[in-house]
Structures are given as C-alpha cells and as structure tokens.
Image (cartoon, rainbow over all chains, first blue to last red; front, side, top):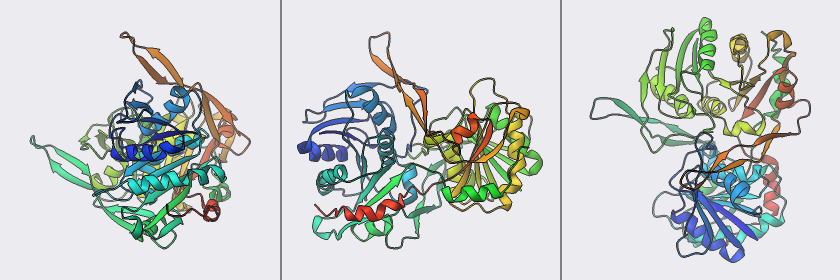
Length: 254
Length: 254
C-alpha cells in the first residue's frame, strides 16, 4: 500500500511527523508538504508562480519526502500528477494543530488538501487535533492508522472524503467515535485594529468564537464532549433544492 | 440600497469597474477589492500577516473604494466587519475574467468572496465572463444590474449564493438564462516541467480541460450553448447521506 501524507502546518511540523510515523507500518509512505506554515489557505492553488519540489530528509525516516513552495492543494496535485509514479491508495492530511470544525473547513488548508485528493480520485482523510496548546499527537496518529482498513474496505463515494477532529485528551477520557454533520462556527469582533509606528492603521484577523447550532450530532458538539468526530464531506456545492425555485424567479436576458 | 462590490482580479481590473458602474444607478456603491491579481486563491484568509486597507480613487467614480493587501475573502470580511458602518444589502463579486464553472468554483477567489458574504448573512452573487480573450463586460454588467431586484425580493436561503457565468458573446447570440447544477471539470497534463538557467526543475500548473458529465442542466453545458448559467451554491459541505452508512463502519477508539 502506498500512502501520501500532507498537511498545512508545513513539512517540519510535529503533527505530520507523528502521523507519517504511525502509518509507516501499513505501507510505503510519501510525504509531500508545504515548506512552511500554510494554514488558512483554503483551496488556493499557485497559478502565477512556478512551483519548486525539493527532495528532503524527513527527520529519522527514509520516506520519499518533498518540500513544496506552495499550498496544501498544490502539494497533493503535484504529488499525484508529477512526483509519484503511481497514484497513492489513500491520502492523509494532518495532523493539524487546532480543530477544523463547522464552517471553518472552508478556510482550512488541511481539509482542502484532502478535497483535492478526492477530486483526483483518491480516498482521503483530513485529521485535526482539536486544540492549540499542550498538544499530544500520539493517540491521534494511532487512531489514523487504525482506520485505514475501514476507509479502504468500505465504500467512500468518489466525491466524498472524511474530516476527522480528535479531542486533545488522554485515551481514557475519550467517550467514543461519532459520525457527525458540520456545525456552524461564527466569530465576533473579527478584526483587531492597530496603528503602526508610522501612524498607519492595520488590521489583524482575530475574533472570538461564537458557536451556534451545536446540537448533538454536529462535529462541534461531539468534540466538546470528548468524542472523535468523523464528518463525511463532499465538494459538490450545488444547492439542488433551489434549482426549481430559481426557475420560478423568471430571470430573463436583460 | 448599499451594494458592496469585490473581485479577485484586483481593484483596477476592467470587470469590476464595469460591474460597479452598472450597479451605480441602484444605490450606494462600495468597492473593497484586492490590490492585485488574486485569482485561484480559493477561500484563503490572511491570518499570519496584518491587513492594510488603503482608501483609493476608483477611476472616474466617487464610490467609497478600498484597496486591500489580502485575498477576496479578506476583502469581504474586512469590508463588512471593519470598514462599512452598516452591512451592505447585497454583495457582487466580479466580473471575473474567465469562467468559474463546475469543480473549479472550489479554487475561485471570485466565488469564495461571495461565499464569505453569505456566511456573514448578506445575499451574494459571483459573476464571471466565460472567456479569457476579447472580453466585453458591458452586457454582463447590465445583466447583473437587471437581477438585483429579483435576488432581493425572492428568498435566497441563508447558506446559499448565486454563481453566474455569462457567455462572452453579443446579446443577440444569447439563447436565454438557465438555473444549473455544477458540472465536473477535470484537467489532464496538469503540470508543465521546466528547467531554470541553474539546471533546477520547476513546475507550472497547466492542464488542458477535459469536461465530463456535461449533460443538459449543468453550468458547463449551458455556457457552451450560449445560455447564461445561474447555479445556486451552498457552503455546507456535509455529505448527509453518508452519515448513517458511516455508523455501519463501526469505527471504534484505537
């Protein structure tokens, strides 16, 4: 089996090292990841600049490892379409430092990398550790290794991938695994205004989380209650049930 | 009425000028757009650098216009949450130079800006001219102005926006307007490999379009047949019909 591992925290982040190391026993590992922190890049691709792929040593491992001056989506595209001589059997993206829950998956480089793999016809899993501090990736990495067979032996529709969020707590505090829907994550006070030494205004994206609709069954609710959340997500954004109604709007040529 | 206009081709692109000018008769125009070409940025947001908003003159118009050193998503977020004293009634993103059809909407800065507006609770429309050469934005801009009332008077669900692609042909060659689904757009030969003057390999994202599933009813089919395509798209990526099946996989804690 051949497993492609990527992330959006950069190739030298702890999360991708722990993930790739846990998957090593299952097959041949390829690591193709951004040369630096690329979180919040969404599904950006690099069209206006050339991409470089530098073969690198990956810590103490002998994996095929490539550092790319692009986004997570670029990494998956370049790995599958240029660097690898045959397609991987599965793609893992992560382990992200911090959750990717609810509406936030739209901004996530971690999730976008997995979406790109699914677009290219490879089963894909995005994995995030739902915390920013005192993170411990070991259990999350083992969990990823434990589900590979299930992902490959069950039928994952071709337009679908899995988005997994794992609470950052010891194994014995976890209550189980839940299949979930995406919740709604909103922020207030989104921007912090500052003045630079030259008197010019600038803004930092900030924002406190306000979680809505976190009823049982959502990813946000599950993680808050110490369940591992697995959300099946797809990339067909068509809002099918509005098409008929749109025809009733009688929009005509101007 | 207050209309926010943005794009991903940059604030000095012809498409946004034509769009904002056509909408001027309907209300107060705000232009908040990237300081340069930002296409293919997907739903990227700027978290690791400060954002600057520079008040600029917008050609011969007296609109409130701001040039932002960020992505289209940043522009919408910053406009609505920091620059504007009250929310716009509608957001238009475009007119993009080139189509945003099928799976490609995931990469599109134009569409992502409209998604961000919808997330922030504002009705939103992304508009693209489906050609890269000999583009003429005038009719497309007039069409946008003609649908504002319909968008505001009909019910657009809060998680939904409209993605419009307009064929680049004279008005008399257009066959009508269709409500469509997203088609599937794939590429072959995705990367072009080159060698730099120092002997190092680099890659350009290239790729020839291979369109699949372009049956009637898709956006791709409609534009190819000289219909304006209007696709309702939403941003809840949950694949609902897989949740029950996922439970049957019996994934347990490792």
